[in-house]
Length: 175
Image 1 (cartoon, rainbow, N blue to C red):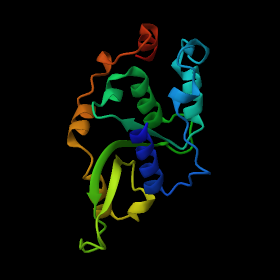
Image 2 (image 1 turned 180 degrees about the horizontal axis):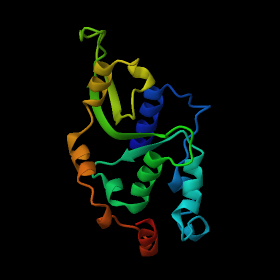
Image 3 (image 1 turned 60 degrees about the vertical axis):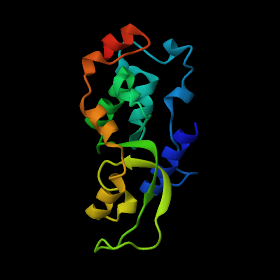
Image 4 (image 1 turned 45 degrees about the vertical axis):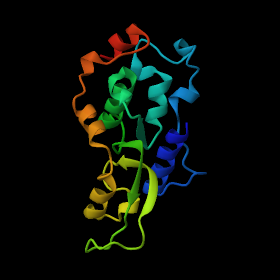
């Protein structure tokens, strides 16, 4: 859970979100995982999961070192739902974070280091600029360069038809 929290803390810092005014909804904690039939219907678009996403400003996927979320059908549904964003005035943002200790160096507009490097426990790839990027593409590139390339490769090699679900009927309904 420490790595999970590190990812959410870094996401909040990058997006400049208030920890008290910007709640995160976590499906695994919000739904009783042993009684999912209460929350999941034959139509995934009517599930409690989807209804919560419709009320959000965006989605953050927390990716473990094995990139398991890219092999799970509900996680793939989450990404699709966020990126598709039908019925919304504005498309929801989709960010991906992972626990990855690294030294991050802040730079000025000329690429020169400003101050000592700071140790970070997580890194993310954000949908567009994060507020902390100050609309500066070099800063975004530098911030995101620490994201492990193996996880990006895993995401790009996703075969949706091979994604798994704990309940086979969920997989069929989502596909």
